Length: 200
Ligand SMILES: [Zn+2]
Image 1 (cartoon, rainbow, N blue to C red):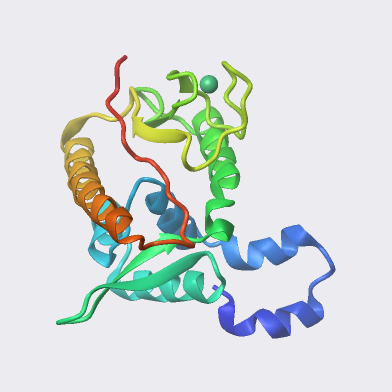
Image 2 (spheres, rainbow, N blue to C red; image 1 turned 135 degrees about the vertical axis):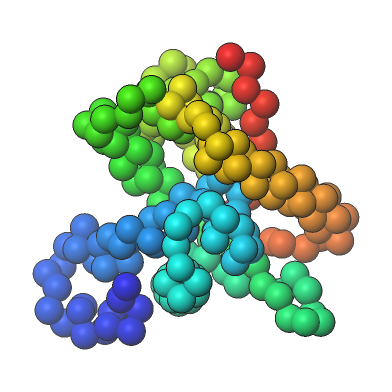
């Protein structure tokens, strides 16, 4: 990833937003870090638990995503110092791109039992094909109006492990958000919802 070479790249890249965006976003581990932000991950150990990323690569991608303005880094504990990572508006704007990746993967990559993850639109309450609009009610979706939940292809021990990790994060963040809103903290980051209690 590119944070260090952005100035040099700007000199040689054409004036193309796809090229500029790809400098930040076209990295598999950066995409998976952002994916896990939308699933509710905020802490280093959350990201480690949700993908096969190594500690070194994760530290590198988190640093780059902060430098590029997609995540903010804040202390959630002083002694010893511990940090969490939250989406900025620029990070939250990566959602339609991630949903486009997901739609392509659902369509063109084989999943024996169906997609492993599905998207529920809170606006109408239905499972929607991954995309920038809910195909049922035609409303545009953003980070706060959808949640990711297990799809028909999510089965077995690994799916159960991920579900447990995500439930732990939701419980912790629910408590943290309640106390932050009491104290008026956490302005400037984008709230998202991973709350999901699948009904169907
Ligand atoms: Zn809808």
